[in-house]
Image (cartoon, rainbow, N blue to C red):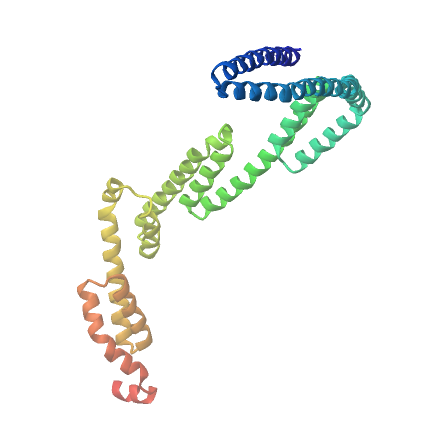
Length: 331
């Protein structure tokens, strides 16, 4: 409608222009008759000719535009109707699809629940407790089976507890083996690793204290054995115990038995000196070499070790001599 009004308002210009052209033409005729001036006449002729030439074209264009608009409107009308039909069909299909999904959900509800059950059993078998609990929550939320979900939770917790107890028992046996072999640091490392895995388990929490109690008990046993060896003057046994006890004693505890340890080592040195002298006197060179090497290894900075070291070359030389020559030298 706006285009039609715009075209009509434009066409009225041509009649006005034609009237003006005639006025200019009449004025030109008057000037030619009176003054012989042809300029205005020529302008009037051109104006009249131009208006007469363009006016029919404008009328034709107006008619063609009206016809095109009617054709376009006629062509678009069935398209608009078809689009409206498609819109109604799509809306209907959407409603039917929603109903179909709900129907399928109801129809396959039991199969879906069985699939969730199988997945739960698989996760429990794989000992993936978190994934199993997530599936249980999904079962309760999606299907509303609260009682069955509670039963599955109890089953998961029971399986988890059994697995935890078995794993803790395995590590505790390793800790026992370490404590029996006096590998206390290895036992503590195993206990720390177990505490990271089961931080809320009371048995696991008490493992470091239990390991330390065993260590202190073993230390007390060594001290008792040391005192018994000192009382019965068991030099060799006392030294062996003292080597083990050295790993457990605090500085103050070591100072308390320092005098006893000094006497034990002094007695050990006297015993070795006597054994060395007897072996040399009996010309038992191999025994003398063995005792001499023991003196140099166990008491390397003593005067006795220095004296033995000076005699070792001669002892080895005599040990390598034939037995007959050795006997003749002794005679």
